[in-house]
Amino acid sequence: MQNPKRTAVRTRGHTPSRTATSSATSAATRAAALSRTAGRGITHTAGRAAGRLTAKRLVDLLLGAALLALASPALAVGALALAVRRPAGGVLLREQRTGLDGRIFELRSLRTRRWRLDLLSRLPHVVRGELSLVGPAPLAPGDPRTAGPGARRWRQELRPGLTGLAQVRARSGMPWDEPALLDQHYAEHHWVGLDLAILAEAVRLPLRAILHAALRALPHRRPRAGKGYLSDADHRLPGYSVAE
Image 1 (cartoon, rainbow, N blue to C red):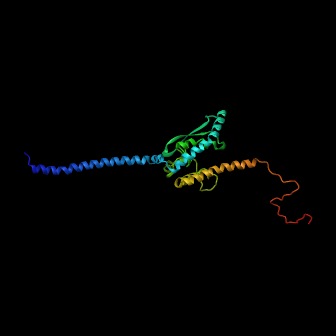
Image 2 (cartoon, rainbow, N blue to C red; image 1 turned 180 degrees about the vertical axis):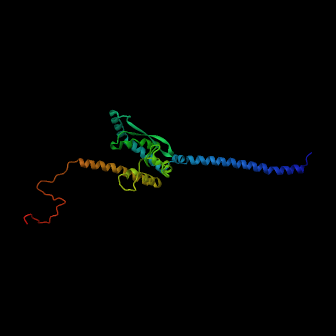
């Protein structure tokens, strides 16, 4: 028969060891689970952000749907005109582009640039969430512009845009207005107010071009008979006479 005291001592001696082993196992299990959770969190952080209804996404949904409804008649007429002409490759131009989180999607647009119908035909991508109204230019997979320092990160954190800062400043001629620099500047400073300002500029530029074209098409006004006009280069003093 075993001595009860010795049994108690052995029991007390082995109990902490089993407890420590169990605690270590639990800690390792929790650490592994935490590591897996953190890994999933790092991988899907942008995905969860994309799922949240941010102010930018709300503007895309509301304004994008409204613009699509307004542009639908013009898009239907443009598509019908293209169908009659039967362009090579079909009515729609299909291109592979890199979107949010690096996902590849097929960008579809009408094969025409008349009245910016090619851009307006991309509005369904805005409503679906593949594009934003304002953002960096949508690039093809493997485009070298995605390989620059930090470019891959900020390009994957934003939806590409229907228009953007680089598009509205493309003709300024300033050395700092390189498209890549402008896209990066937008990625670092974008907010709803900047988006609305870019959209207003994107609308103003084609309207101004259309207005100038209409004015040039008008017949030029001719001076009325009996009244002379001096040229800008005529600097003769009042009362000047050739006879003098």
